[in-house]
Image (cartoon, rainbow, N blue to C red; front, top):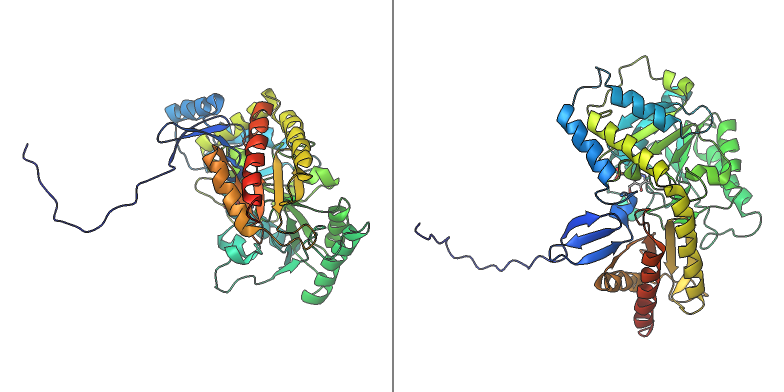
Amino acid sequence: MEKLMLPPFDYKPTPYEGLIFDGKMQYVFDEKGERYLDCIAGICTVSVGHSHPKIIKAAKDQYDKIQHITNIYLHPNIVEYSEKLASKFPGNLKVCYFCNSGSEANEFAMQLARSYTGQFDIIALRNAYHGMGAAMDLTANAAWKQPTPHGFGIHHALLPDTYRGPFNGEDAGEKYAQDVEDLIGTSTCGKVAGFICEPIQGVGGVIEYPPDYLKRVYEIVRKHGGLCIADEVQTGFGRTGDNYWGFQNYGVIPDIVTMAKGIGNGAPLAAVVTTPEIAQSITKKHHFNTFGGNPISMAIGKAVLEVIDEENIQEKAKEVGGYLHSELEKMREKHKLIGKIRGRGLMCGIDLVEDQKTKKPATTQAGEVMEKLKDLKVLIGKGGLFGNILRIKPPMCITKPDINYFIKALDVVLDSVEKKI
Ligand SMILES: Cc1ncc(COP(=O)(O)O)c(C=O)c1O
């Protein structure tokens, strides 16, 4: 066939580099077949491993039957999955709603809290990330907020951060909780619809609160008529190791729980779980979500829960995550860049500082560390208000030999970055 030439055009496209092409369990591969240890898991999303065979099979089997049917016709997968998901919760958290993203789940949680209480105001925490869209109102980090009107009826309490925040003594939990009560007293009519927080802030830089904080805040919020919402988008499904849900680490039971990311191991699935009484409050109107309860998403969600059980994923998160934390603590003495190591299980954050005393965030260095680790075939994330927190949230099938590799790579990289300070 005759060769044709397009008209001349003075532009050279940048060569495409770093395309992630393939993935298997805790590893991903680029277009050249190079293998990387995935320590960020699509931002805490691939919970039990890339292309996990059981989950792929569940999806394929369901595709062979029916891909979609409106949830007006109750598909058995919704029932089976709801029962299994609800069985993972304590208390009366028994009613499941399904949607497609964490943002949607949080928007719906706000709706439930407002419908049930008849109140409007919602308290969230500064430095939180709860999503985009209407959930951007809850998000409290300038990097993620568009300059459009939002935040109507949303108030942000002090972040209970004992490393950089104003309170860090024995009574820090009580003092930070008091700020929530002050906020309710000064910025609302004295009654609120609810309070939302992640048990450990993820995007915010893996920030845990003082152990007594949530218990006190839940008491205060309930005293003012509000519901307590836990955003388990990153902390759920065993990731924190000690417990299946992050809120359990603080000895509280929320009224509403939102989930996304790890729930679908990479599939667009999210959920809101609440009590029958709260669910009842929205039954006077239709509630509908086209893809909520989609048969394939339900099959995937159920397979994820089964894998977590069958492969002792929570136990692995505890053991391998515990190992990760203890190895990192050993490195702390050697590396002046490491200000604080935070998190639990396989949710870990390393707060990099230019100076241990001033705690000046080492933002540029965090970027360099991330890039250099990539050169050594390790992918991590970074976050926090100043972008100086290294975030390690791998697929929970990661092994101790992988952690050893990560620790070695981080040691080498920190050595080289610290030389320049
Ligand atoms: C804690 C938390 N909540 C909500 C969201 C929003 O989820 P999505 O991106 O699926 O809308 C995220 C996303 O990073 C998150 O980390």
